[in-house]
Length: 241
Image 1: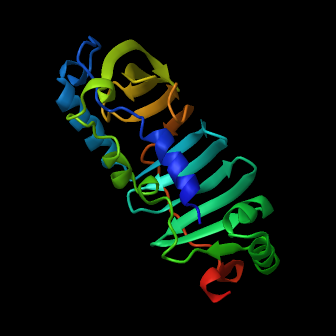
Image 2: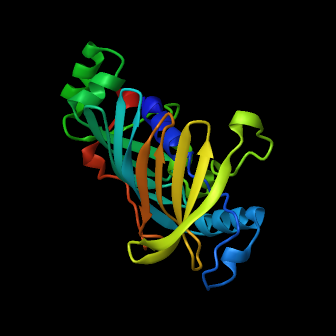
């Protein structure tokens, strides 16, 4: 049901490079002096060590405009709000069960037909819908560990598919010292800001010229987060409709 939305999100975020090159001379724990492959390992390690992170931002893919504000966890749970083109919905995955609460435009885009959308809207109203377990969800987007597997560089790439990465300026992102990393591949340019001090987490990403240009921010790294399922009287199981 939400496969199209998931593809747009992953396409926008998979451009985040974690392949860095040496050259920074800032003080710290030696991160700036590491070689390219070791830097990638450190960033992936530190991101995967997080229990939670908040992901906010917006991108455009073809005619689809996406904006989102999500909390991701290492348990595979997530919660937040997503707007895609004209449709807005709240999304929550808890203990492997996925719940959505969408507006009329969301169900018109995802129910399969106008008649089915009307039936769903009439039945659910403003309650949460439990998606069938067979329905595609956000998968790697919700789980931080799976999410970071998308970012490992393809060292076998050659020619136009090969990434060219350089280090830009050192500055601040939301008061945190960060190094600007610029990656180019084909017509796409992606700028990623990574924390200089440990843990070396991704702070912000901006991409342009590719299939899904956009800007995303990662914040609230490792904040204490407890996500719970909606109250039972506010949930409708679509399998039983």
